[in-house]
Amino acid sequence: MSDRIFAATGLALCVVGLIIAWQIQSEYSYEPVGPRPFPMLLLGLMAICCVLMLLRKSDVVQWPVAATLKKLLLLCAILMVYGWLFERLGFALCTTLLAFGIGMLFGARWWAAVISGGVLGIVLFYAFDQLLDVTLPLGSWFS
Image 1 (spheres, rainbow, N blue to C red):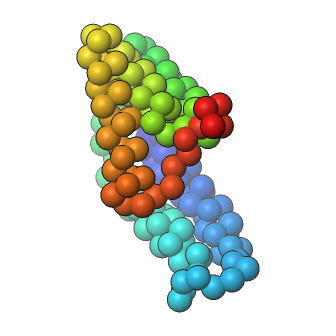
Image 2: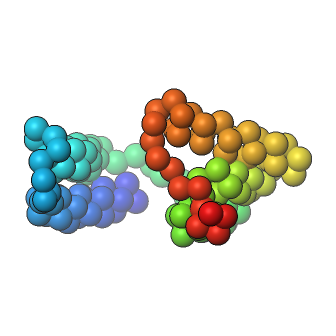
């Protein structure tokens, strides 16, 4: 039953997203097809998956224990804080803190979480900024 609730909620969100995506207009044409098709394609594929989930035979689902649900809620909170602080702290520091928080949440030693978070933040910033030429924020608190 829970997979059907998830699929119905997902389908409703996809329909709302498709309505919003249909209204996307661009002031100037910088691509041959414009900015509308990509979100519509993704939302359309997600809607098809939700419909398939609604139509398939239901599985027996065991809900996770309370400790797992607490970890999931903390993970959601960490991701929300990441999005909130992304422009203020910049990509590298914010990603370092995210990786540290997730590492601690799933039982890593503090020093391993610090090292892996630092390496992940710096390597991803370099990869996106230098190799892929994607502009990432340095942080408004530091610039």
